[in-house]
View 1 (cartoon, one colour):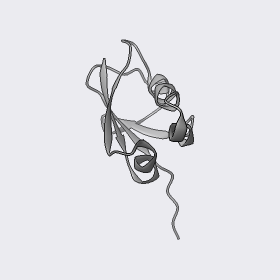
View 2 (tube, one colour):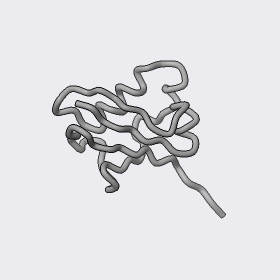
View 3 (cartoon, one colour):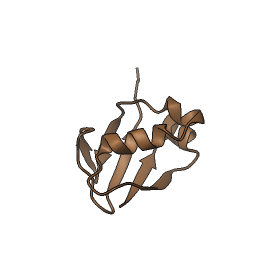
View 4 (cartoon, helix red, strand yellow):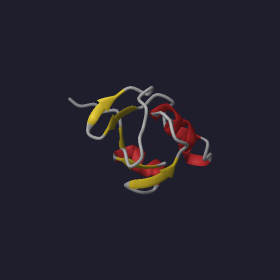
Amino acid sequence: MQIKALFFATYRDIAGADELEVQLPTGASVDDLVASLRSRGEGWQALPEKPAVAVNLTYSKLATALSEGDEVAFIPPVSGG
């Protein structure tokens, strides 16, 4: 199934793009998506094993099952003052 991964701020720097189409097996979860991206090596190892994500605009857990065409946004850590 085809999933759209969206990247912001430091995660965009890791990905080298704002978005990326990723092919995953049917029944894959957000955790599988993260593992797939991290397995690409090089800079992808900087992507946390447990990042904050939103699936189709809703904050979600890593165990969330994905469906064809889902959009997964990787939300970088935020700090402020």
